[in-house]
View 1 (tube, protein in one colour):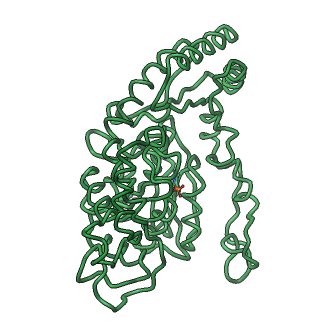
View 2 (cartoon, protein in one colour):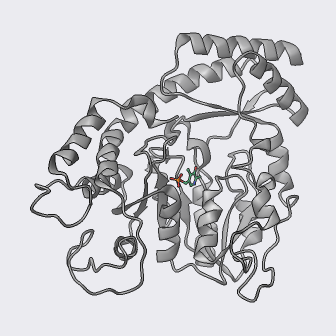
View 3 (cartoon, helix red, strand yellow):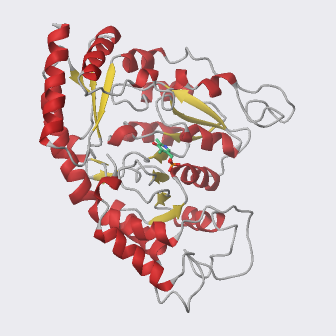
Length: 403
Ligand SMILES: *Cc1c(COP(=O)(O)O)cnc(C)c1O
């Protein structure tokens, strides 16, 4: 799964370029920096890699969502639709704009179910965020068609799918914007960091200024220039050290991260296929999978739990997302309880102190049926023969237990 497995001389060299100048800030310091602009160069290379017109680096995948939602004009009074299987960051960012998150079912792609999306669109819907969970695409073409019919922009949360594609087109380039995370456990990492890609130059120019306190970047797109300000901003600037690491990781993404993961995933899949009644996640384009996870279904929840018990006893337990408190709607107890630090109860209550949204844990029955049967292995970049043998032997024991 993570890029940290392959840190090496390349990352060190890029970092030393920055330390040699002593300039850690991405803007200004023209004299001292000797032409070194790591964040800017990371943005340009990341955009080119994705086949997107522009890229804006920020501090995290969460702030990438926040910046993208903001430049799309989302705010209080709006609804934003996302899926009930995602990391909490997706809806944290929605709340932070003042909008209210609305959750859809997932289908066997483990991503947004387009049929349920259609049912959840209201006149208040101002953005749709499909999440490409665990390295493989949502039904993004169908989702985009539905969104276009209603004139609603699509923002792809691509935090878990860097380098993945659908029919030759990189994920993150189908919607108005695509966001990425480079946190410590993502496919490629800068420790902390994020990116927004877009083909829309106006959106990109707004992002560039918004994440830099509203500094005027008009004369010098992607960098500072003028002294005026067109709108209020915030600070989500990436540091040069992160940009440096990003350049090294991006250069390795296809050949040293995704390629070995594909090989390892195939080997793990062959082992898992020996479980009686097992089926696999619907991956719309196996060639474009970034192969960070192997997701499989047992015939029912009881069997999935029994299998995972045996796998765990034999040192090869899988993730059972049905009980995962970070990624699955009915387990987000703070969302369900409306827990917040704001004395007014915001964002669950409005400015008038009245509760404006209540989340019922039972509203996604289709997702519950799917998640209950689901087991997931992370696919490492480096898989030793000994570890593969351990997984295979655990699977054989689990298979025997459910025969
Ligand atoms: C990791 C993640 C994020 C947030 O990224 P951070 O860089 O950790 O803030 C957002 N969405 C999804 C789906 C993620 O997995």
